Image (cartoon, rainbow, N blue to C red; front, side, top):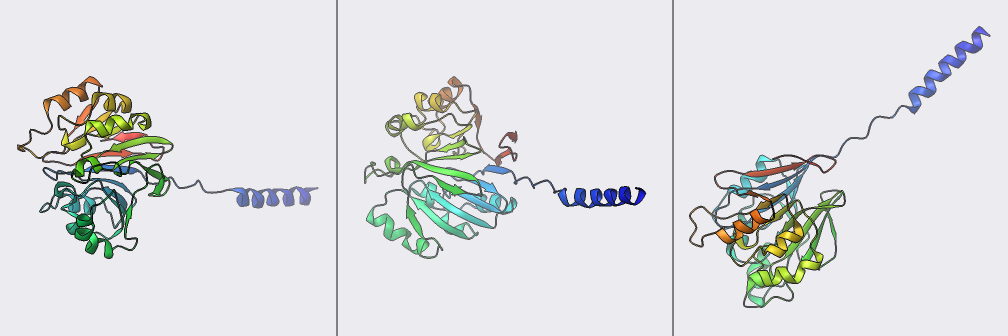
Length: 271
């Protein structure tokens, strides 16, 4: 009997050891980084040395490149170009980090010719966005284009601005809209969901970030990038009043970088 008990004990230890499994590693956090690029627009969603970048800021600034390197980004999965105005696209050639592919709206023939050399050097080239076709990014996160610019006017790049929603763990976290004006925003209202962070359209101009748009998104934070002492008065008093009306806190990277961080459960834990 004593021998049987010993064997049973040894067998129990063996089986117990076999059944032990290490806890699964938690996925890395997701960061939203908005550097001070002056009078322009450029934000990055970063996870584990990879990023999706929305716009590249104006030419002549290095803030975006420095921010990406500071946060350890080694590769950009997608560069989302909302439209071709230089304050959104001028920094493309100075990113200094490999880009896999570029997603864009409707380009004119002149815009296509201008950007063709950049597209030629990308492994996945440049791809025209398709509205309501979710794209997996950064592992299990998702990006969906809500406005692909096809209805915009050829002579008005702002009206062709892409609108993109970023979500993870099934919830919208970030809504960006380039320089889309209020007419474009109002047309998209049925597809706008409650979102944690909203980028104010057109740097917080009077003709973007409509109250109905912000009310529908009901953000915790409104992010605006506009150069200090810019000649346009961005962000305008009207845009700031609408932000206050929906109870959102303002994030504005002037002289500093704005960063939001979501933990593995996609809860916002720091700023």
